[in-house]
Image (cartoon, rainbow, N blue to C red; front, side):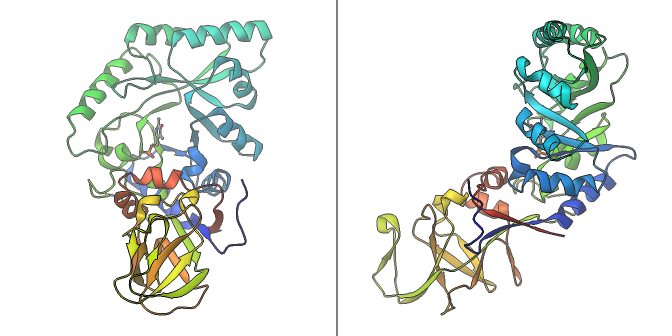
Amino acid sequence: MTSARLRKTDLVVDLKALKHNVEMQRRALAPGSRILAVVKANAYGNGMVPVANALSKVGVEGFCVALLDEALELRDAGIQETALVLGITPVEYAPLAANQGISLTVGTVEWLRAYQRLAKEEGLKYPLKVHLALDTGMGRIGFTNNVDFKAALALMEEPCFDFEGIFTHFATADEQDASYYQKQLTRLKDFLTVVKKWPPYVHMANSATGMWHQEDIIANTVRMGISMYGANPSGTAQKVSLNLKPVTSLVTHATYVKRLAVGESVSYGATYTAKADEWVATLPVGYADGYPRRMQGFHVLVDGHECEVLGRVCMDQMMIRLPHEYPVGVEAVLIGRSKDKEITVTDVAEYANTINYEILTGMSARLHRQYKG
Ligand SMILES: *Cc1c(COP(=O)(O)O)cnc(C)c1O
């Protein structure tokens, strides 16, 4: 898809804030802890390669992605750090990972055996870096019992494997009630009793765990995702305990300004009708850019004023009420700061009845990314 450069609309990514957030997390962790920066889904919409390049400079240990394709994109961009694929990769593609030194997540003995056969048949040269996933209660991927886990640990001695990591993932680390979290932690400790020698990476913490459960991190590495992008993993449920700075802003400029007369309506379905004469601006952003359709009644910022979104957001355009006349080209902030006002990605998410993760990752390829700092 085209990244649109000619409509004066930018997804502005503050790389200084990104690095600051990593530093804040690092300071909160035990000395010697390592950070794997999660850059899946185009670095939560912020642009994977530029974000990864910026993070390389602040000494993150490596990167986590969801898919092998994403890891290959990092390698193609010359990024040589650890690159861990968090999802399950079809075994027939695993040789691509081995050749590029990409680490894969494995959650069954069958997968390991299938790879062993493949490595023998094809005479693969390089060992495959493996992280064994433990399902302690997420119910998604990973070993579910110690018997299979032990069998996997035994296979890690085979020359076709380079045993690099063990990890688990928490389902409720962002919640006030820690009882389910504690159950998962107990299960993890039980799994780890059968591990004779730890691999280089043992990781259990996502952003929420790194933020609210630092005291019981028994691992040596944190997988930092949403908090790195300056957003609260819990939405608004819990207070952020790190001094995070927002990374992502969405800024556009009005393409049309008019006087709307009382009784006139705006946008599809004519769901908004002016109660008085008012100034209305049209913005060249819509739901195809990832700004949700259901934002009618929310607001954007123009010159420090909160301007209501009038009528339904269209695919590529939307209308807002101005407090008074402004010229075409006036700046409108959909996410970010304008004078003393701010709209966070979480504000947008709450209004749209979703989570900040979904808003960030939904920022479409059509939005031009502008990097600051
Ligand atoms: C996406 C993901 C993360 C990052 O989660 P955040 O809540 O954004 O920190 C960490 N670990 C796994 C396994 C993931 O899938």
